[in-house]
Amino acid sequence: MKIGYSLSNNQGMEDIQGVIDLAARCEDLGFDSVWASEHVFNVSYVYDRIGDKPYYEPLTVLTYVAAKTSTIGLGTSVLVLPYHNPIRLAKVAATLDVLSGGRVMLGVGVGVIEEELEAMGSPFAERGAITDETIAIMKELWTKEDPSYQGKYHSFSGMKFTPKPVQKPHIPIIIGGTSKAAIRRAARSGAAWHPTALSPEVLAQGMEYLKEQAVTAGRDPSEVEVSVSAAIGSTHNHNRYSLGEDPEEVLERAQKYQEMGVGRLVVSPNTRDQSQLRPIMEMIAEVVIPAVRS
Picture 1 (cartoon, one colour):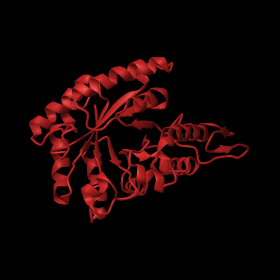
Picture 2 (tube, one colour):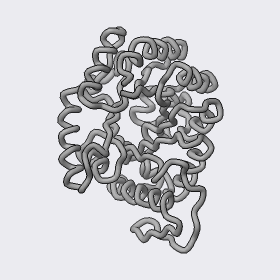
Picture 3 (cartoon, one colour):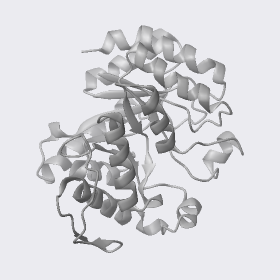
Picture 4 (cartoon, one colour):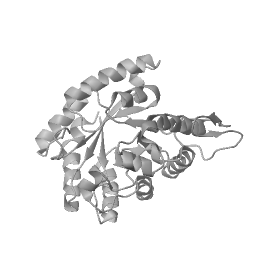
């Protein structure tokens, strides 16, 4: 099982350079990847968590990280696709994939905060359809020499699109979310299903549904990896599953995910105390990574 690390761009950190520097340390310590999250406004549960403190744009953060590292994967957990023009996003992601030598993993979701979606010009009720069209458009642009698309929201043809991603056939699209709709989307069009904070019991149910839906979609279930994001310490939400705080407890829970067939665990330090980020990262590197590395 691979281990990723959340870069805390969403935790209201004032010293963003210190957060960026952790990515290089992650690479030295053997983490598989680093991940950045997305919201545009500090609203709803985001405001409850960080108030008016900074929430940094994920692709900008990962571009900076790409320049300071050489091998570590660069993931989004997750981009809210209805916030983005799909053609523009395909261009940005492909450019970052080329700049980084093929390290981008595009975790995506539909969004859940209605007022934020409406402010971004995306009707809440249509967010699923917008997301599906965006995924289809990006794949078309990344893989076709002469891309064309006729959809509800976007249409194009007769124009070249460059650069193409380094990764073939295209940048991995990882589907975030815990709903059955998200699982079905992962089964249809994702390289992985990427839920957040699910207990092993609930995750097992989702994994079984994922297998069923992959078969329905005409895919081999083994083509769709399971990638779980989970926090260290208290989540301040009784509905969210945590890896715990004690190193032995964290290792035990990580190994449980591995036994279930999870391909990647993305660890979130889940703290606004910047001084705690490096100790948490180094504990994971010392205790968890050697034990779960295949």
